[in-house]
Amino acid sequence: MMTKNLTFLLAAIAAAGTSAFAPAQQRHFTKIPSSPTQLFEGTAADRASEVDVEPQMNPDNPNLPALKGDYDWDAEFAADPDWITENVPGKIVVNEVDLAAQVTELSKIEEKYRKIRLDQEYTKARIIGFVPMAETYNGRFAMFFLVVGLLTEYWTGITIPGQIEEMARVGGFIGPDY
Image 1 (spheres, rainbow, N blue to C red):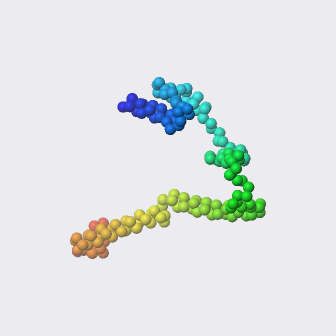
Image 2 (cartoon, helix red, strand yellow):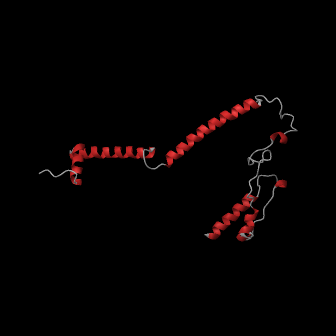
Image 3 (cartoon, rainbow, N blue to C red):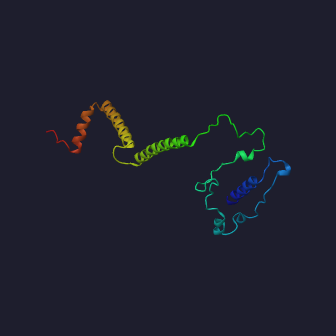
C-alpha cells in the first residue's frame, strides 16, 4: 500500500513539473528524485531557515503590508498606444476636503458595522439567559411535548390537564385521593 501511495506521489510531482501544453521549444522537465528522501534534503532547521518569515511590505507605504495582485498596469502597458492614463472616461478627481469627508463618513460606517458584528459575536457566545438559541430550544421542546400530550389524549382518552394531574400524583406533589 505504501509503495502505491509513493508511486502516485512521484507521478503527481512529475506531472506538475512538466508543461505539456507549451510549444516544444518552451517545455521544461523536472528531474524526478530517485528516492523519497531526496524530496526533503537537509534538516528541518535548514528548511525552516529558507522560509521568509518577514511579511513583504508595500513599497509605496512601508507601514502597510504588500497587497497580493497589486500590479502596476500603467507601467506594464505604457508602450501600448491604446492604453490611456489621462482623461479616462468616468475618472473623478477629488480634492483633499471632499476626500477627507469621504474618509470620515466611511470611518463612521465602518465603526457602526464593527459594533454590530461585535454585538452579534457576543450574543452567539452567550450560553445562558434569554439568548436566541435557548429560546429556539424552548419553543421546540414546547411543540414536541404538546404533540406528545395530544397523542396521549387521543390514545388514552385522558385530557392534557388530567395528564398533568396524574404526573403530579406520581411525582408526589399531590396527595392520594382517599
